[in-house]
Length: 313
View 1 (tube, helix red, strand yellow):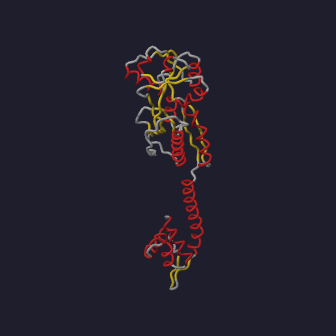
View 2 (tube, rainbow, N blue to C red):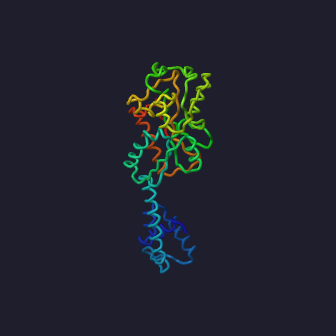
View 3 (cartoon, rainbow, N blue to C red):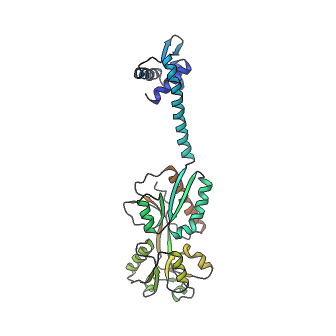
């Protein structure tokens, strides 16, 4: 027994005619007759009596008619539910963000999801790059905003844009007064940086190797607020994105200098490779990308937009 057989039987029973049922279903009349005949043979009982004026439902047919209506109603309801899910996706979506991204992005993204995808329950988890990657691979996150993730086969990486990393420290520091410096000028300067497992540290170390500079890391801190505070106190210089320190710059507590050539990192939306993303997740990630691009365009995320590729999923 299949759906098409039940549809043919139901239409013929209600219309009182196989030919009228065929016209309604837009099928050849012999095809409708074959479907009904297969159903009768499977059930071992005649369902319709054929006569000159059309067909009449038998006792067995009348019993099946009730079930057929209920079954086809359920099928139609399922189709409507799935169609509604495509139009208004629903479900829980968990997005991971590094502290610097969460600081400027989380509130705006939450508000946008509430407006445009009201049936989605959004969760934001904050963590550093290594933690976010582990959570992705453990499938406890649906996606994460990651900086310069390692291009491992285990990850599906959608690069949204690049942003400059700047030298950050207290106003009046000799290097910062220049406004722009070569990376080699950092030699011997005390630095406050995240631990080696973090993407920012790896980016800085890659540039140091390229410039032939030995970094003088006096403190390793995986706490963004503490790094900013210690840098403002003059305990050392650090390297951060401008968006991360914009409030302190505006308040005069920190100053920045750019690197020549620029030191940049990629900003990505990353998922676990091969993960089956729900419709809710796919819609949320498309919205997340649009929000990030809008922030760059308006200047609230001070990155250099270098690629607006369509999301990979």
